[in-house]
Image (cartoon, rainbow, N blue to C red; front, side, top):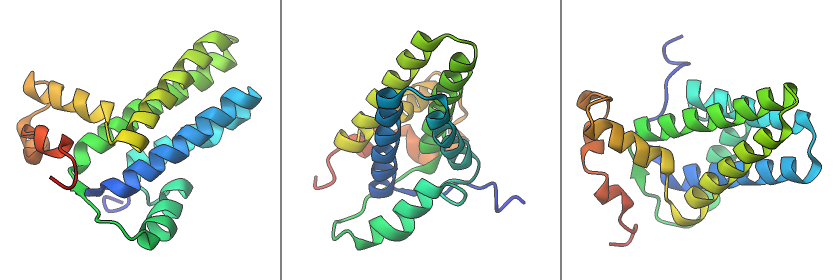
Length: 164
């Protein structure tokens, strides 16, 4: 069971960015059709990735097994704990959006999904992981122990361009 509920460390940043692109597509699809059921696979995907990384996520499996291996690029690997934290934030936003929809607070749903799409766009297009930045701040403030992610103590090297 412990193996099943593990998260990869390190994480292939190419795969993380492609998954974020899939999240953008799912969020935009919801905003276009405005049907609650479109949020269900989005919420499930985040839950699966928080619990197991790509193992139980259809989007994660597609990206890591089909797309990423076919790309002829230099893959950069980044620490896993901040990426897992970011997936948790995505789960919070997407599940909150689904709950808000169920409670009839549709404007709240739209705000949450627009925020999620914005953050996922930053990750997929510019390799800027807002959840990772928050994770780093929480570590600096002592709210996340240093031993959770030793490599995370210097986030600046992970934010540097891949070719530097």
